[in-house]
Length: 200
Image (cartoon, rainbow, N blue to C red; front, side, top):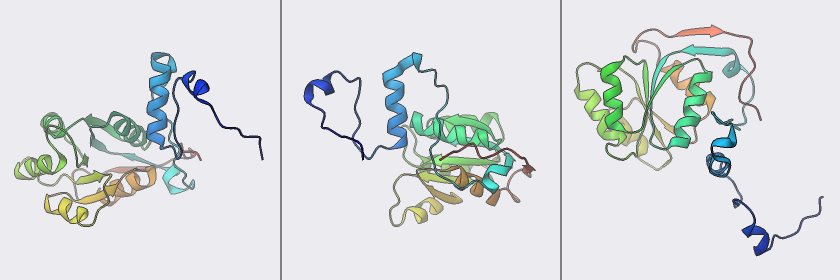
């Protein structure tokens, strides 16, 4: 055991920031950016999800993904995972931007946050389903609220599946593989020898 001591108020005032345990990954990352600013040299976050290296580290998916998420930290984390999986990823910060992106490009799958400003995920999904141009694109709900009835509400809105945050590489890969068959163009799965990029 190390020697631990309490920190007094004067020492706290000399700190650039302090965090209360338990510390969430997204909070830690955001705090580092706030403290270090442009000098951080961080252009992408490092995931600390603990996963067993295996199929998730050996498969590379080629899919055109639309990621709709209003929180910039969550969006960056999810984007990083998708890019490491080999996906061609486009991001949007709300439902309105998501519809604009769909106008410009075809996607194999859409990851849709549920609660967003301007236009939430439910409303955006209804617009997509009512438009004849995108009747079959899989829409996967993302929500931090794992409440009873959430899954049913997402499916009723026209979404195909449901993921609870925080997202991991393994769950994202599984859902892309699950919904690749018969939805949009066929996806290519390539075996590689690269180890998992998400380290414990």
